[in-house]
Length: 533
Image 1 (spheres, rainbow, N blue to C red):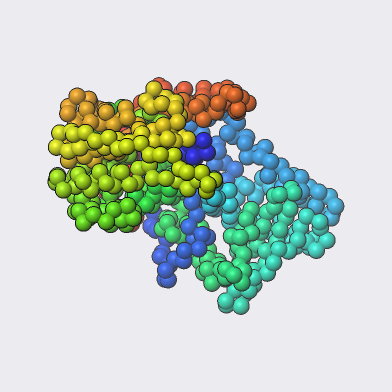
Image 2: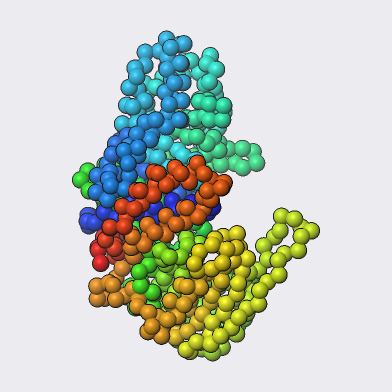
C-alpha cells in the first residue's frame, strides 16, 4: 500500500503542470563549479523551491484554474496551522516572555515572507522529510541576535556542536527543541541563515568526514542556489519548483537516466514548464502507433542499451543480448490505463529489426527473472513453487506468460486476487511487457490491427513525450485508493478519503486530454509546452 501511495503522490505531482502552457526565455545558467560537484547529498536535493515569498506560494499555485478547482481552501491554510509551525511559534513566545525579548507576533510571518530557498530530500521510506531552508541573514537578524544572548540559559535552546572546516573557519550548529521528538537546527554563514530539521545535513564525524564537502558547499552559496548540480538559472520570477525525475520515477530512473529534472516557474502572472535532459529525446511519432488507445498516463522514455545490458547481465550471459539491446529503437513507452492498476503498467519497446536468435534468449531471461524467489522472512520456510512458463506463437515472434503469487495482486476484473499474470512478447518488431493480461491482449491485438492505437487521437506527426487523460487517471486513482484501504481495517482513513479526496478527483472527469511536447535540447533547461488533443 505504501508504494502505491507514493506512486499516487508522484502522479499527482505531475498534475501541477496541467495548466502551464506558455514559452518564456530561459535565464542564463549558474556558472559551473570550477571543480567536480561532490556526491554529498547537500548538492543533490530531490526537490528545491526558490521563492521571493514562501508564504505566498500556496496562494499562487491556486492561480492555476485547474488547481483552483482540484484543491480546497484547506491547502491555503495547511502550513498556517501545521503542527511544527505552531510549536515553533509557541516556543518563540515562551523564550521572548521568559527572557524579556521584544519580539512581536509577526516575526515568524515576516521571516516566511522573505526571499528563501527550500531544499528537501527523501528519506528511506521515500517521503520528503529532511529539509534545509536558506534565508538572508539580514532578514533573520531580529531572531538570531536575541537567541544568541539566551542560548546558554534556555532549556530548549543549546549548542549542538562546532565544526572546523579545512580552511580554519568554524561552523557552529544550534538546536532548538520544539517537541520531544522534533527539533530545528540552525547555523549562520556569512550573509546566510541555514535552518534544518536534520542535523546530519550540516554535521561531520570522524567516521564520515564531510568537512571538505561542507566547506565547498558553504563557499559556493553566494553564487549558486541549493540545486547547483541541476544547473538552475537564477530566479527571475516569483517562484520556481524543481523536482528530480529520480524522485518522481520511484526507483526506475536507471531505465532512463537521460531525464534529470522538471522545473515549474511562476513569473508573477502564469506558470511555465521546463525540462533538463542529458541528451535529446527522440521523437515518439512512430511509437504512439504501437501503443493502445486511451491511456491514463503515458511517457515516452529514452532507451540506453549500455545501462540495460548492465542490469540484465546478472540474469543472462547469452552472447545475443548485446545485439538485441542495440536493436531497440528509442523511445520506449511506459503507460498506465484506467481499468488496470498503478503497479501493472504496460511497457512497449520498438525494434529496428527482428531475429529468430533472440527468441530463446528472451524465453530464458523471462523464465529466470520473472518470479525468481524473494528472500523469506522465515529462512526455514521454503519459497512457494513457481508456476510454469506458458509459451505461444504470435506473428513474427513469440509470447511468454507466467502466473505469479503477489501481495500486490489486488482483486480486479483483470486478474485473480493474490496473483499477477506477467506477459512478455516479441511480435512484429515490438517488445511488450506487462503484469496485466488485459493490457497484454490489447497491445497484441493492436499489432494485428484489431485494436485502436493512441496515435489516432493525436494530431498528425505529433511530437508529444507525455500523454495524460484526466478522466482515465481519475478512475485509476480512485479505484486504487479504495482497494488499498479495506473497510474492515482502514475504516476511518477510507471514510476520510471518500469524503475529502474522491470528490476532488472526480473533477478530473471533465478535463480535456493533455500532451507535453518532446524536449529537443540537452544539458540546458528547455521550455516545453502543453496542448490538448
